[in-house]
Image (cartoon, rainbow, N blue to C red; front, side):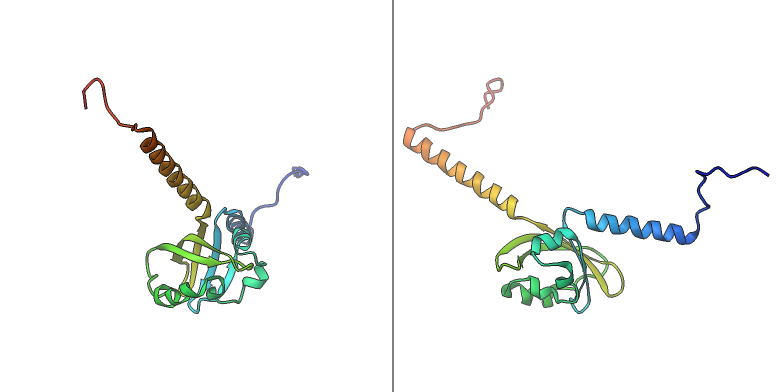
Length: 165
């Protein structure tokens, strides 16, 4: 009989594979940079990841069991009953939605929702605040350039000296 090496691993079982799979997906859920929200047909929050907790400013425990409407400003709540989850059948539903933080401030987010199971859905929520601020700054910069060009009596044009176009 050959003695077992102390570093030898015991054989894997189907139970080990299930646990490994669950740990892997729990890690993916938690490490997502986007807010992830699992909810049911009644719009009740079943789970939320750390990114969503940070976006909304509420503890996970304070979110679970609450209705999604509680993280939406009043003007978005009617949309919720009109568009979700009835529209979500086979494909992903996307759109921009305003959200309400615990401190009362709002932010616009890109939201993608898809069905996970018969009565469960996953929402991926990406805060658009930075993108909106960047676009505002570009627009402001372009406006300043146009004003400076008008005052100076000059302009900018595109041309290709090789083709004359």
